[in-house]
Image 1 (cartoon, each protein chain N blue to C red):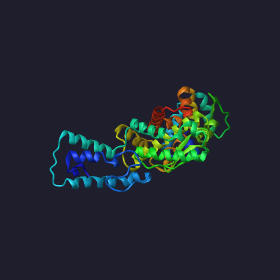
Image 2: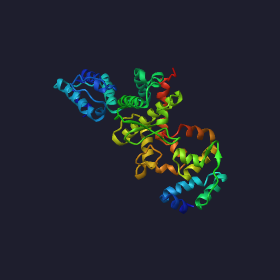
Image 3: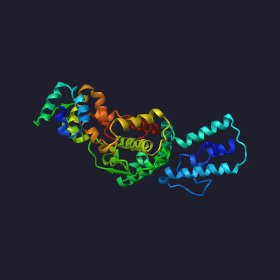
Image 4: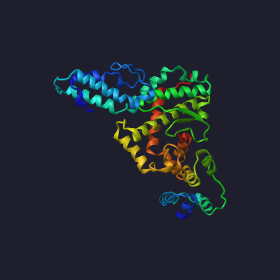
Length: 90
Length: 266
């Protein structure tokens, strides 16, 4: 997976390693989306408390893996995550 | 220049401590020189005048013997603090509240009557005063259309606030806009400490900002504008952006000021 992340994100080994470590811990429901994305297969977006991968990418300028990891945070700690997202980037 | 130049001892130290150059306000006429500072000049240009004031104080007492007393040492310590450090977060909040209270157009009922251009100019003049309190350079303020999740940012040259907030007549947006102004200004204060010179007294805070820069990828390339959601964060969880020490500190600061101001809808 690290190689795929490196290739798709055009990032360093070190950055890819950090992202992979975080992705290793995501909930299985998000793993399927990750596999699709890694293999350049179209994925079906999911809605968690009103947030989707697409909305996080559009509204918060996140990349796919950033959005996926954020969805996982929303799923696991909805109160904290939603409060943080509502505060927004500033 | 060190404190040993206070040849006049306690009296000279006390006189220096009362000099207008050490006040956080931006409208003092010099007692020791005729020069009046522009806000934008204060940060770097003020130091030579402080030194000149010290020299003058020392010269007028040339030849007199220094007697160190606990009172003198305490005054010298206070001078050192005033030279080196900005007021504490709580004190900054108090002073910002005083400035806010002194500008009627900033109050929500008057604010609502202004067009977006006037609002932006008013925010910039407020920012100038905040910068004086925080002993840093003031930043231009601009508003622009932003993504829905972006309230503002600090690109190192200007404070940008979402047009959605500045242009709104809703009280909650007004509150968020002020929070954003204080938040982005705090990032300028952090930047001043990290890249220009340390003025934050707390080692804990300063070291946490330093760690943020050194350990979280703020030292190179894509992260040259550290307080945007830069490339280094786009592919990581929002959690990692949100929990950075500089972000926690900026949120705490903005919250402290907003609470101190006690904003009123009418």
